[in-house]
Image 1: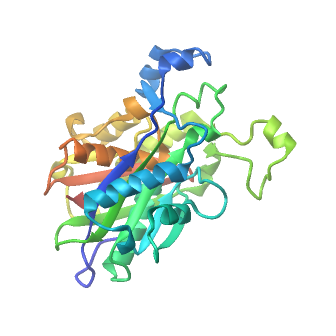
Image 2: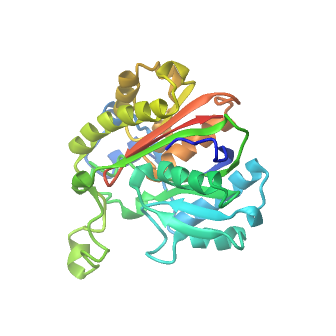
Length: 332
């Protein structure tokens, strides 16, 4: 949806991220499952991933990322009107992880809710937050993508355990000068493909039982080939759509910050856009796929490394469980 003249411009005022200290390399995984460093790198581009310890929950990583984003934005927690946490690994079914974060950071008075859109979660919450601020309903919104996917991983399944990692990324959104900030957002979903990436048990369809535990149904299940085919199409098309919505072309992109799932998917998206790979930010090799945390962690890292500068045109794009996709154009 495009901004019109009656709405306020909305931008990112500050970013932050949090990563567990523990690193598991491909060589570590060689000792656990039938795989190899070469096999993983060739097919995914991943060299290592961060893994939360037993005492660290999603809200813990989300809280640390939130505090860093608030500091970067020079915004106090009490100024936040709304907190959204995008996650598929919430601390528990309820209360919402966002409510736990609200309490942790002392954002008294802020509304709070979780959002589930898989790896597209940060783009979905960014679009939602933008509407509230643009319409003048709220002034400051804190959005967080946070995951502890290691908690729902079958470490005996070599097709999934090599892919995912834990982390959190956050951003504070607020009004900005006209012509800057979020220029366009685009969201989409195809529920028919939802069966290709699931966590089957634990919900109302299949409540927890001895049988669901014995059958490993509380772990991620994925049809990798189907998700791959969907991702290659979705990433490029979504990025193009967001550019069309704000009348920009590929030549106007300074940086593409994609969901960090697979280097082959990222390369295919860049090729589809005819975008030089030098303009694509990739940190997948260090962290693996952190689902809703991937894009905000990459964005925060790129900002702190000085890769992204004021006035740059950024395209954020991702895909995820649902199946979902999303994209966004930002003038930094």
